[in-house]
Length: 114
Length: 114
Image (tube, rainbow over all chains, first blue to last red; front, top):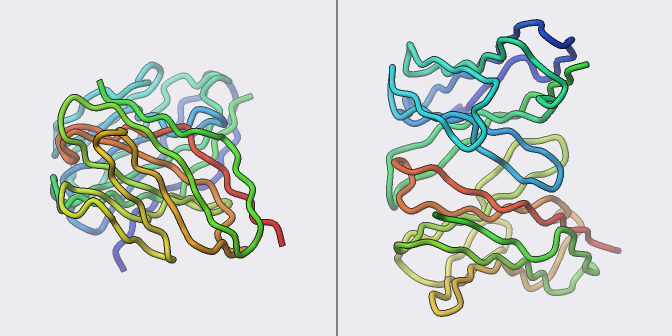
């Protein structure tokens, strides 16, 4: 089954404790991205990657890091989480580009930073 | 820069009534437009997409949307609402998906009243 998986699904942590949210896709997609969803703000892109070792900032990259060492994985790293990073996070991967483009979303990771 | 405006953060309709969710976009080039649906505690699922072919696009679950260039709109409709349609709906735009990011609107929550 084609899917994007994220782990963990729920995480409660404290300010300053480094964490990683993993994302993996089994569709051999080149394009992957991370979004955060906040009430009343919709989805905002954090980082995206167009291929292995190619990453770029989205709209809200501050406080986040990513890496793309393998095509299937795109982890999101919070080196020193703060309460304003409490949010619902989605990983997504995309097929092709242009008219055949379709983006698949993971189930989400709900992060709470206290 | 691309942007999306969804009019109405919350829309409430009676079961069996017409559903109309509004989306206006701005883009400097012919856009690619998308509607996604998010059911409670789930990720986003693609409803339909416009990729410069037919201006009336049919999607899943009986939804459709019409691209109107003169009005820069891509409103989502369904002739008869069902209780299972209750969810949050997001409109998104991209100049060239796969090379440029999707920009999402803030979302419209649809409630269906029995």
